[in-house]
Length: 312
Image (cartoon, rainbow, N blue to C red; front, side, top):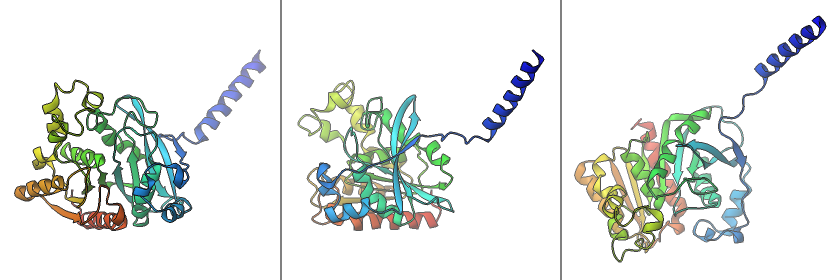
């Protein structure tokens, strides 16, 4: 009996020691991302040529992972594009907000700007938003899904190579709306850049608007809540609450979101004395595909200016 007690005690000590020295589990599970072939991804021609896509896929300097993280009781996902070798110094972070509505996968779309941003020395993290990629919850295009951006901050803080004092927002189309709303609600971004962003949602969801038919699916209670839906997602209505320096870019030939959206927001910010810059890419369509490298270079330059000055 005494011998059994001694053995049990020794086992407990060994177990405790092993537990103490065992590596702590990762706070946010991450899995490597596999990219589909060029021809297998619908719409990839808006983001890359076959040659550019092949080069980005084969670039071993960087890796992309899908991270699971909690957001208001849901498990949601984000893509992290980072150096393959652990950085030795903290890096500034760009939160890239993608376009469109619910998606199963949009990694190929993040790959192209992600690589350009990473080559410039930034970490890139792109929220998928609730309802996408198998996550629970409902994507309301600027409803509670906006919290999925704010709830990325613990993920960023968990990365030892991320400088949480140097975070920027970048948004494409719908993601531009999300970035603007996040600025309005106090997301801690030093600066932001958007392209193809809707800045006045009201006419798009009104009778005859292109999003009118989608309203009941996207926004529960629509059209009874039409006025509130339009107000909360229209940056021209609350431009006074956008305090971070903002770069507004738009395709001059954009038929999905009229360039007037960008011009109207720029006019509002100018009248308010807010820091901004407007650039219209002549002849370019919605996501500025023909000048994507220039678009991202402009965003990088904007972030660097406001990174070095410590703007908030």
